[in-house]
Amino acid sequence: MAYNKQKLNETLSEMKKTFLSDPNTAVRGQNFIKQLHRYCIEELKNRGFTRGLAPIGEIKILTSHKFKDVDVAVVHPTSGPLLIIGVRSQMSSLGKNFLNYYEMEVGDVSAIHERYPLCVVGLLYLHPTESILPGAKKESFDFDRAEKMFALISDREKSSDPQAHYEEIAYLRVNFHKNPPTLDQKFPTLENLKIDNFFDKLLQKYIERNFHLLK
Image (tube, rainbow, N blue to C red; front, top):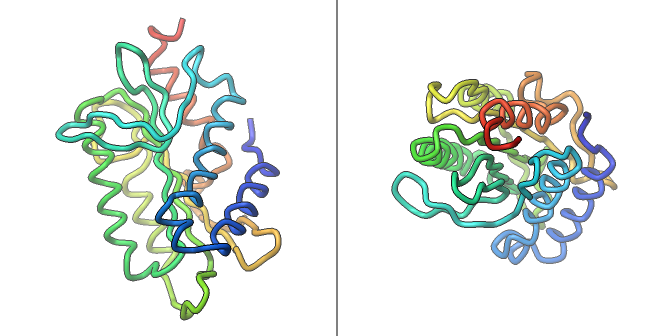
């Protein structure tokens, strides 16, 4: 089942409006990124993804050593989180902050898998082709390098695979200067980082690992 391209385009348009109305509040108050959370939840629901367990947004879970807020999750009443999707965006200062965010994502997924080794964890990461922050200087960013870095921490197939890897990663590059904003269809170049089958691949791993709970 292909991702809902029309709904994603509508979501990106609303995100652009939210960001431009007040960039600081949109990012700090999370109004901007929560629109993408809701899109992910809808994609899961449309697939009958959870076999009776409803996907929810913005909850707190206990990881290996601390409580953590997660963006989208499917939680079993006794077994805990079975699926988590982290949603991240950077709308400016890509070169300055990307490495810090990358290290943060690695630490987060490690802490989740350490406590819940069977949990299927996905990451949806969004970068703009160019910043639309008013007054922002044009900057260069190595998208190809970022893509290769994400590839190093994706495709966790078995619970015995490295805990610092995500089961699936979708890397989006969006041109917010266009109206409506458009997803760069030629990026990423690696098939396993495209959003096309992101939700379906999460579904497959989710069912494989939790079939005994989903009858």
